[in-house]
Amino acid sequence: PIHFPPDPNGSDRKPDFVLVVIEDQTEQRRSERMRADFVANASHELRTPLAALSGFIETLQGPAREDPVARERFLGIMGAQAGRMKRLIDDLLSLSRIEMKAHVLPDTIVDLAELAGQTVDMLAPLAAETGVTVRFERPSAEMPVLGDRDELIQVLSNLIENAIKYGASGKSVEVAARTDGDGYLVAVTDHGPGIAEEHLPRLTERFYRADIQSSREKQGTGLGLAIVKHILTRHRGRLGVSSRIGQGSVFTIRMPSARSVSLKP
Ligand code: ADP
Image (tube, rainbow, N blue to C red; front, side, top):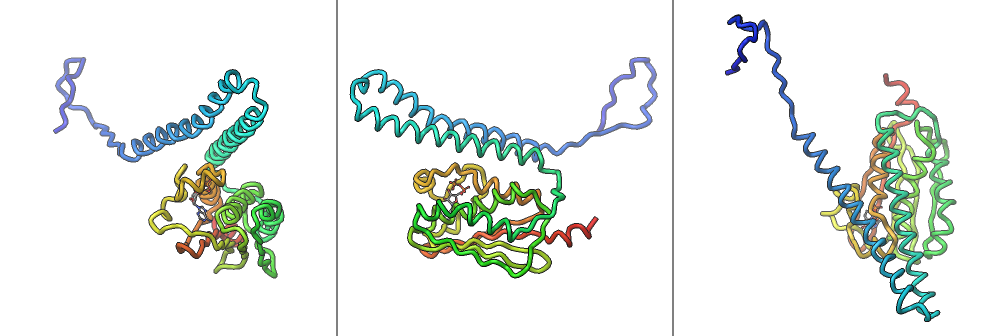
């Protein structure tokens, strides 16, 4: 029953209507908790290299002061830790920039196949350094999609970079761009260690790593696929993954054609 507060004017007339606000707080609570977790994780990730840096500074000021060999070695480690902090901050900034634009649909036509080719060329030095051959299967026609050039290059480079980093050295990575129904797809295939099935649904969560040790070794931030997912959502695109332990993984992005999107209101 709804109990009405006493009328301050002393009248016993019932109000004409009552506004009852029912709010589902479950979703709101969930997103607050996720935000809190994210801040805690990000702080922890930044703290680790910072603690290492502070430790080495102390050592350089004290015991290693007069030891040129130790100095060189420690400075090298400090440079690597500073690099790790920079990568993390760059990825955090990318995520926040993309989140701010989440509801703005991109309206420029770009050729997804050309962007894939450009990204493969851009990553040639990393591939050479890692001992991986990247093959690009170029489609015969253009693949026009509505998109932000830089963001789509970031999607493609995160996927191809992962394939190069995690795919075993000496093996190949294939990037194939082709039509897919009324849209287009780009598939990135590697022949690395693969990813166990239980990890697949969680790969796009921030800071989720299937293999923590290997992510650290490969200088991963754990944010690459979260960035991919956010950018694709804004572009009405989708990310797919299939993988087999010991055989490798295929990451696929699917995007609607610019023609089919502009026909729909
Ligand atoms: P990271 O910066 O750690 O690479 P990502 O978000 O890009 O983070 O990827 C999340 C996790 O997914 C990685 O830590 C890794 O365990 C796994 N992963 C991503 N791509 C591949 C791949 N091609 N082969 C094997 N594991 C992969």
